[in-house]
Figure 1 (cartoon, one colour):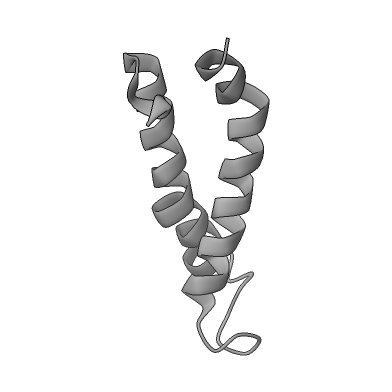
Figure 2 (cartoon, rainbow, N blue to C red; figure 1 turned 90 degrees about the vertical axis):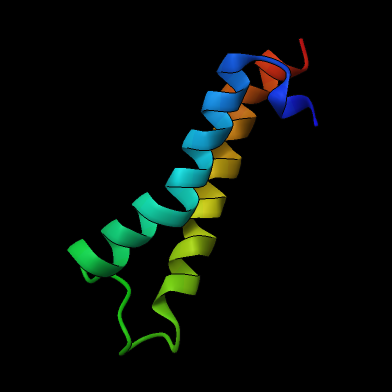
Length: 69
């Protein structure tokens, strides 16, 4: 559980969870209607997958070097 060793890592992890489960689904499903019921049975699930992918990319670019220094 190296992501909770410092305050900065905890805050970054919370940001990634907010991005995955709230921000990206809200933007893609509610605001822009980019993902809708016309194209997917469960648009929120697809938004979670996209949010998770973005979070993983950001983790590997920014947070990983702070955790494993």
